[in-house]
Amino acid sequence: MSKIIAITSGKGGTGKSTICSELGFALAKQGHRTLIIELDFGLRCLDIMLGVKDNITYDLGNVLKGECDIYKATTPVKLASNLSIVCAPEDPFAKVDAETISNICNEMRKYYEYIIVDTSAGTNESVFDVVEQSDLILVNTTPDPICVRDARLMSDEFYKRGNKKQRLIINKVDPDIFKADIIPDLDNIIDTVGVQLIGVIPSDNEVVISTGKGIPLPSNSLAFRAFDAISKRIKGEDVPLSFKVLLQ
Ligand SMILES: Nc1ncnc2c1ncn2[C@@H]1O[C@H](COP(=O)(O)OP(=O)(O)OP(=O)(O)O)[C@@H](O)[C@H]1O
Ligand SMILES: [Mg+2]
Image (spheres, protein in one colour):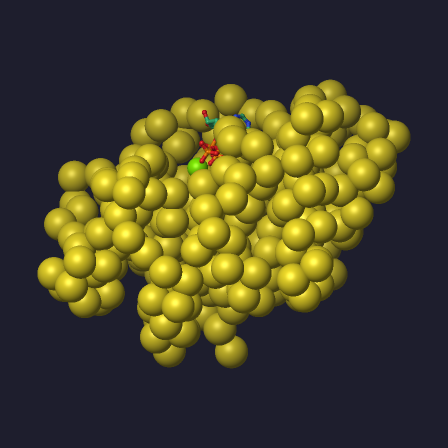
């Protein structure tokens, strides 16, 4: 059974693409065939984050223009044997409709256990429809109140349209709060967004280094443990949300 997982947020820069690449690395490392489809038109970044910027011959833009099929536009990630990427079109105004993307995702379900969809911030109508139809929506926010409010607005819209399979990721949390395991502020964030928490990711400079170099996170980093735990919860494993457990 394959699963389409879409990462979304209200505001930009909350860590959607980072979450896509790190969850991709984590699931692939655990032996799952994983595909990332980047839908941030005109602002591709996952080729850098996954270390394949010099290996992209075709991207989703070529598929949408009929210049190649989706298989040709799928690039394997060298550093993760089970991971591949379909990069976003370089043209910010590339024409797309939700049905075309949904058809592509459904075609790729045959070959991949997890299809992770990266999106742009806010609302592009077609991408919104694709997210709404996914099997799991990961709503992403930072602790910043503006991001939290916008995450709530996005999530409400998905609920209104009938997608109840949403989980919350709070990213860029102060590492001291993360380690202390005392989270009154995080409880407020969860209440405000109104979505069940699936994981908290500390602010960790290793994330910036790894995504900049296009390599997986070191396995002794705080962020690695956070992403590893989230990937296992996505698979239905019972990994406690307590950070103390993560830090053991
Ligand atoms: N946990 C983290 N710790 C430290 N830095 C982080 C973390 N998560 C993301 N970042 C940094 O935050 C910046 C924005 O991240 P990213 O590009 O993943 O956000 P985004 O939501 O995809 O942005 P956009 O809305 O523009 O697509 C990047 O510089 C990234 O390295
Ligand atoms: Mg992004």
